Image (cartoon, rainbow, N blue to C red; front, top):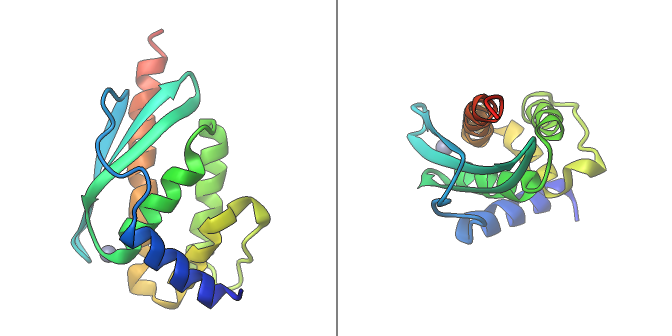
Length: 147
Ligand code: ZN
């Protein structure tokens, strides 16, 4: 399957049936994100186990790319340490913004997001969930440090 097909199939599937959609209750932290360029709004909820994201969910309303990207992100980061998630975000960001970035195997289905770079106006739709997750994890960090 080439990347164009992968992009279309994965984005359509995750937009139609978003994974990990809904509030997480209880959660250790959440953050709200807004992309005024497109009108996407989403909230990301995390439950932490030390440095590890034990569970993550999101809710909100947005375009197909923002919803699919958030769905893919929750699948990719669940159960991972914050340091691993930070590295993953860096790779996703390169994939979205650098025309010659080649997705490595560690990205899994996130590789489909490389299709977004053909539509530069939509890059913020795809990265919104990651920025929102980072904001939630920063809050989580301040909670963890008091323990
Ligand atoms: Zn959008």
